[in-house]
Image (cartoon, rainbow, N blue to C red; front, side, top):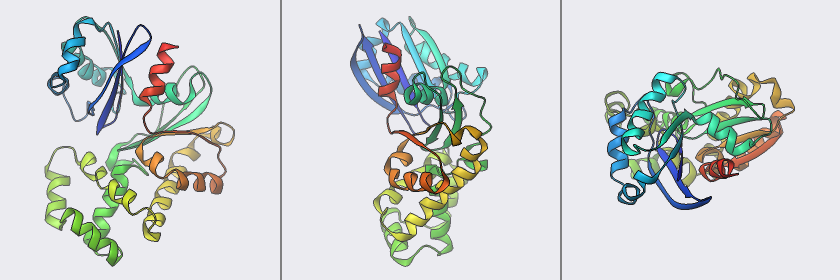
Length: 279
């Protein structure tokens, strides 16, 4: 049996296949070695009762995750997975490689992730280029959920958010300065916390101020990420993640303005990732 996972910092999607057919699917919290240890992986997956039944028979696990960009970090996730699947061969790779497999298959293209965080890399159809991006929510993550969440929190507290949106934001989150500072600076997973406010963007996506905010973020992503790769002028640019999916109209607008060719937009790449390995 083959188990394939695509993991961001917030959520991981899993598919289990046997004899070329998917027999089980589930999701778990996302596992990022910057924020989670091997024991967290082991305990979280141990909560999945159906998975326990299949675990001994799983021979191959392919995990593609945010933050899995070096051997030491990959080992953290692999160690936790090995405790759950003792009879399996474990492969842990960066989520960018999984995104490339799912969006490009064996063709060339630029692959972008716009989810909790953001990243970009060029895939030549065989290998993924070394990315200069993926700097995380403090230095980078342009146009990601954490990027927009950080701005929503700041504009709410600064009282520069339009009054109608500020009223709706408070009604939903009962937010104040102290609550925001406590969660961002003193609680674990500040990137996931900030990204959780991206749902507010989606709920009010037709509001002119929200449109302007999203457009500015995607333009920022183009200028700091996409433009850094000369291939954007000729190769398709693919997008993975919830932000890309829910604001596909804005992505297409920015693509038209900036002159790059839109490729696929995938909200759940694990399906295409499984197809890639089964084929």
